[in-house]
Image 1: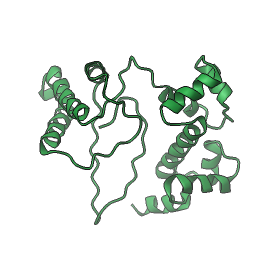
Image 2: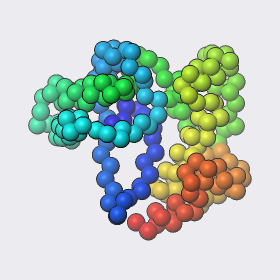
Image 3: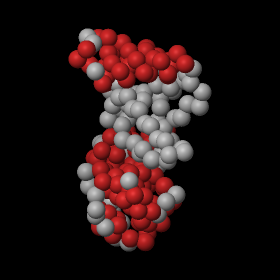
Image 4: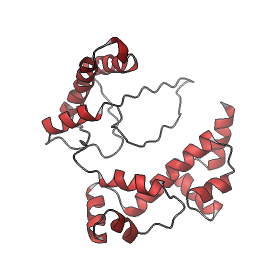
Length: 208
């Protein structure tokens, strides 16, 4: 399940040749309702794998997914109720998405940086754009478990991965597009982030 507006990486790592990914994005209104109903449950800040999932939770997810992909067959309220059921299960397991009324600074900054990845972003510039001091910016990001530098790297690498998988741009051009003048430095950073060289991702993508 993915919160509305959330950017994420999906890495194809099949087991025995099989790979299936099913994603459900609940409506913002449903997320807001659950956020208000379960204010003491921690907000999910990054991907959180759940190793053990009860059959009832899986069945709830399947019902919600079926309702979303065939919305014309069900009243909208029924679709939202099914989404809500999944979010309630997650809340009881200790996971909650942030409601729209709760500003996620890291996500806000990701969107800002993504508009101009080639820019040499500084913390002072980010702070000015979101109308807060640099110290406050760093503190609030730290509360979300990320630094300015980590956020920049994450946005750039995520964009680079998407370009490698969906375009024929050279690795050098992709490096420039995401803000790296040096292709070798970009490659080193990419390998650190994904444990694969950009050329390996490109080759793997060409095989499919």
